[in-house]
Amino acid sequence: MCYSARDTITPDNLLIDDGGGTLVSASQTFELGFFIPKERFNNGKYIGIWYYGLKERTVVCVANGANPLLGASVGGLAIADDGNLKLVNESGAAY
Image (cartoon, rainbow, N blue to C red; front, side, top):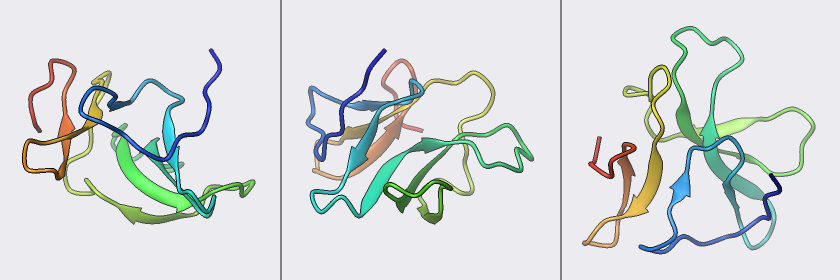
């Protein structure tokens, strides 16, 4: 599957944790998406922001550091009714 970079999400177009979708800033400086740390200390997936285009991912911010997606959970980033981002599970319920 081929993915193209995008810099926005909409209520109808979530960012899904499917192994390839990310958001890239318009300036192509940062990238946001789901990742698994190299250490894999808990097999959790995290939402982070890292520098775009580097050979080795350098994460600068983690959104769900205390509450990773565990195991085979599939999640996504969605826009809530109030306009904020929310982390949702595979059925669309907020974490």
